[in-house]
Image 1: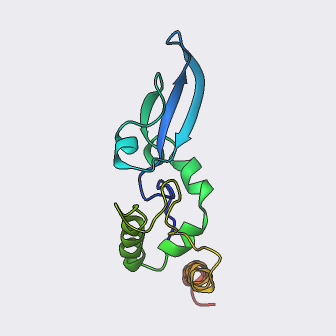
Image 2 (image 1 turned 180 degrees about the horizontal axis):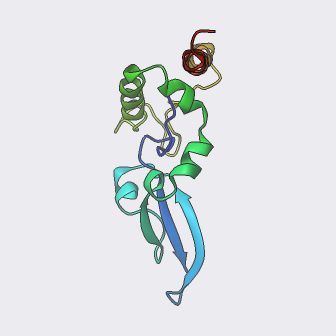
Length: 140
């Protein structure tokens, strides 16, 4: 599962505003994917001003970045539970086998099971739209 608003390391993506050395805003916003809880609490480099979680600051950009999640969420509440477990499992294990700087994978959108789940969600949406349209036509 690869939900919008979360980075590859299992921490919430953050948005920072870039400032120059004189403390003036450059008018540039950057998306930061923290690799630790310390980076999540203090994203960006010195002089950058954190704006908050990317999903709250730029929600449409985050949803457009990962459109397959719309199909997955249509499969029901089980998707939310699987997403929470997936994000938790993506955190690097202290002292574990993960190499520093190399994320543990939690997004396998190319695998057949995820593909079937996304297609099933979209087909469910299509059936709902079709049945709502037919119900609105009345008896003819």
